[in-house]
Image (cartoon, rainbow, N blue to C red; front, side, top):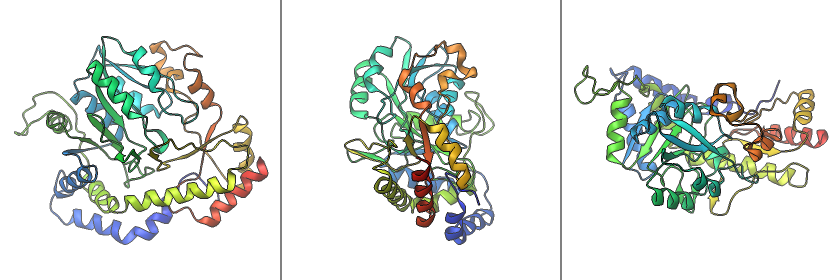
Length: 366
């Protein structure tokens, strides 16, 4: 049987009774849309982050897009972010009519090079969008100082960083708003699509609630600002409520898997993840580097191990974003990493025996 980087079935088998009870609770409640489960999850996820508000939406991409719109981003504006990210980060910016502006990343941690941000700011810049990639936070203190100095908002992309901390602060609690995805693979994942925005700004919260419901406010069937249906589903919300109580345990499980990788592979040629000072890493994915990445991935197939790359094509090199005008070599670190990084299997319920098999195969291939 082939081993993949992620598998939800071991977790489902252990949590099946609770998951099915969540479904039964919603189906028996008499309310299937924006009911007590969504309301409860929003309150509990906000409380987990010590934030005033949480607005559940249908997916992480719309969490970003609607948060940008709630922060006033629209056509003619610019949003500074990175190209070393999942494409939805940039798709969301594009969806507002704004222009994504890229800065490069650090070679050692793969995160936004905050030192490049100020030079990218123009009179059109509206929001800084750091991506807490792979499970740890961008250096937010200097980014916040920069945003304050220039009168800019910060939207944190926390799709891969549920429960991560920086100097004791949870990811998603420093900026004006934070967008989360609950896609099944995430550290806190549902059984389908889902997303949310956390904020302590009442104006952002109010705008988000309108934007997720066709642009209607208070009186249904009356549109103030045309928008789409972007509601979080009741079933997913109830499942997420249950799983939120186990989030810290999921994080601890991932950290234990990472510890075993570090212990077993620390003396190999692989460059293992760097955890920055002051950060806790939640290892949404366990990303390593090697100049012969493609050979290694191909060789591991003989062991029935199928790995993936997060991400093989930087966003600025994609055909869909060619109009932005970024030539090859414009983001050299991002482009170099795309040829060397790959992900090892990572999920809290990864059996230690299976991890041993992966480690042994890797050592033989190396």
